[in-house]
Every structure is written in structure tokens, then in C-alpha cells.
Image (cartoon, rainbow, N blue to C red):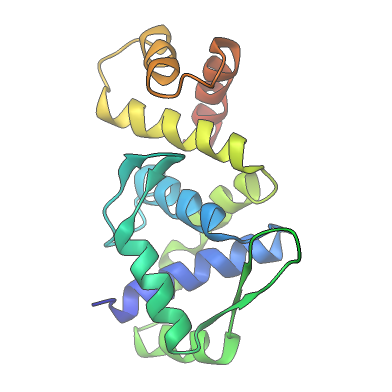
Length: 173
């Protein structure tokens, strides 16, 4: 079950992405939530695994569905592209207030992450989020070892882009 706090945090990420001109599709929400959890210690309850296009949370996917069913999020269809999430501000504000205005405590960290990730494309999000995932999983590895691992687990990513992903990830920390 998705908790009120989780819905507030997820909705806050979606709103912050949207405010910065993001497509605000599920990939952006997933990657921004993961990066905020790992680098800014935002207490998302969702667990992430390394999946096809980088870190992914099946829990967060269920939370998005749960939030849509309750009218907290809606989807806007974009012909020829995937849908975008929009936050129902009155409902989200009521949830946040019911949760003791929990979002205020984490908004700065979420804003920093969304400032950087909002305008990234899916390939860039995959590289950066996977670089962060690997950095956390192998904290004792050198940057070059991490870049080699990124290429190994994501063979479609060229070595120079893998190294650049670690540079971008370091700027977010």
C-alpha cells in the first residue's frame, strides 16, 4: 500500500519536474525519485533495482497507479509520444498538510535534482541514474572501474558517455 508520505514525495517530484519544463513521464519521475533518494536522502519507501533502462522501482510504479486511481495524478496523452503526469495541486496540498507538511523538509533536495534532470532525455537519464546506482553499489571502485562496469551492464553506452555520466552524477551529489 502506498503511504501518504510516499504520495506527497512522489507528487512533489512530479510537480517539480513539470515546473522545470520536463516531459514528466514515468521515466523522469522514476529517475528523479531514485537520485533524490540516494543523493539527497529523501525517504522514498520504494525500492529500486537495476533494470532495462537504469534504476527502476516496481513499488513506485504501483504508487503512480495508486495516485492516478485517487485523482492525485492524471495523465495527459501526447500523440506520438508517451503520456505526462500532472499533479492535482488541491489534492496534493491536502495530502501534504495531512502529513505534517513533510514535503517542505525535502523540497530543496528534490529541487536540486529536478533542476538538473528535468530537461534530460531518456538516454541521459538512464546513464546518470545508472552511474549513481553503480557508485552506491561499488563505493570502493575507482571511477574508471565504474565506467567500465556501466559499459558492461549497458553495452549500448559508449565509454566516453559512461565517463561523462559519472561527471554529471558527481555534480548532483
